[in-house]
Image (cartoon, rainbow, N blue to C red; front, top):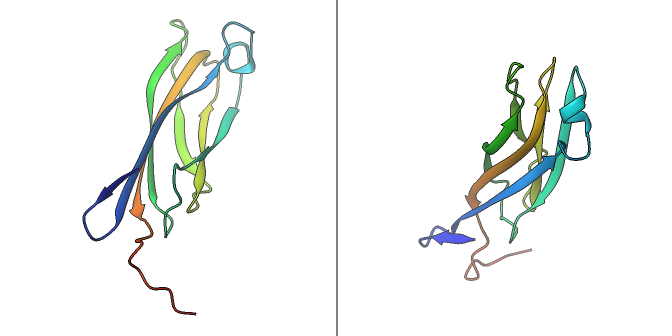
Length: 116
């Protein structure tokens, strides 16, 4: 995690293959209609408060003959992690997807005082 200045702002990031359904005939490649894949992501260090999280496709491998329908989101964001969610629908055929994510928020400062 990167830390920015004395304000204790932290940036954490990752880039992970969410699924690869082409080789084993998984539902994203062979299915139709609404489909969803989600994965829990854990930050390298916890944030002090719930951070802002941005998710984006960093690689997708789609069938050429159908419409590309994609929805990518961060859900259930907490100080320690979130769920990255990929959704598609209709006749879209998705072989593989890699998601990159970026979390920015306040992190604990060792010089902070905690008073009970």
